[in-house]
Length: 322
Ligand code: SF4
Image (cartoon, rainbow, N blue to C red; front, top):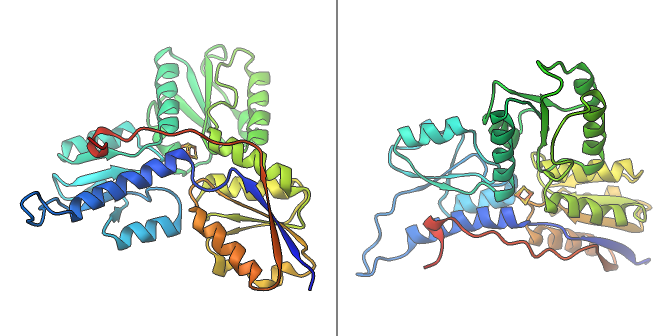
């Protein structure tokens, strides 16, 4: 039987922002389940999480099994309870709502999302129209839009840029969602600058290091692969962008939430498989996919590392070790 080759992209899987967000919920759950110093059971209330802490089914299911209560909106959280804001960030109106309800907020917003919020505030404060490049309906985009809703417009496509009208073409700034495709975003920024030559913004620097690195790593292996598998959930923006990137390279690609989603039928005539995972997908899911492919015949795994990530974010004070 011919040995199948798995080209493993590196970096892949969890980024620093996702690790931090998951860590925050785990620490709150651990504090709840630990014993008091007098060995009595603690009275720490439930741990609520607004929206999915990160966009991954396995992560959310495991935290739910351990006691986290996921809610869509704050009116589902009892007054005074602890609620975690997800890695994708929230609009200021959500923060105000939490304060009015007397909720104990632990903020798991990724610091790189917070950076974009701060830019939105700064650009709006100088009186600019703020053009946000991103995907409508994504939680991160809703949070960023909420910083200056009267002054911010969302663009998703080149056609949106073409149709865009602003009060003052000389006062335009732009921002991007953190998890976009670098090549597509560059094209949108170029179009925006062509239309508004004075437009100011961070180029593609709002696209975070983890998104950029995962795309760079996949680009290296996609062209050599007959098929690309991206481990990630359907609502994970950076994972979906990886699938699209492989397809733009001319390689068929599938998004898989778990190993059981991978049928043998995809592997007819496939000798080289490219494998990666979005920033919210746990590393063990990648191992499970490799095990599944290996269960059908011999495989050799070759890892291609384009860069080594060393980024770490500090925890918020509420869960920081003493
Ligand atoms: Fe932060 Fe980027 Fe990870 Fe999102 S993908 S949590 S922005 S590091």
